[in-house]
Length: 139
Image (tube, rainbow, N blue to C red; front, side):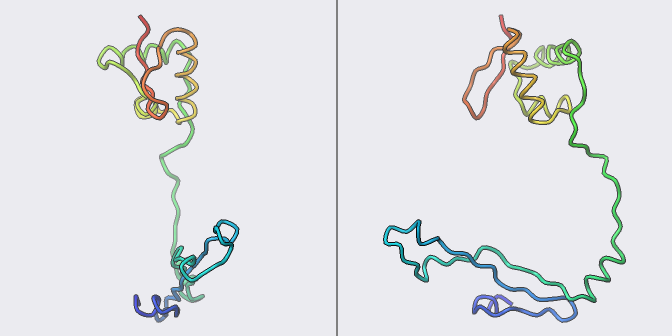
């Protein structure tokens, strides 16, 4: 399979389907001399095209179930969430956005919103780097 694909041919898996190369190139406009050469072409991915019979068999047998996971954030009032954060901070020096997500069931967006609100309200102080902010209780 590797030899066939490396030579640019597609590879057939009997009764399953075909594997082929997906290639791309560096646009000539991004090259200093504006010319495209063989070195500018690269392997982006390997495509798979199933045979109709195989695809229909999978479609006939596949079953989906509803996940217990949700992308929605838990709903809190400011007082309730601050009580939870205070409890967390009694055992930890600081809190992060990741901790907010995992401990309190918030999305990244909602965790950031709440942390910003508590910083602006004077309950937390933001320190650390731009990519890893740490939130300490205000004195």
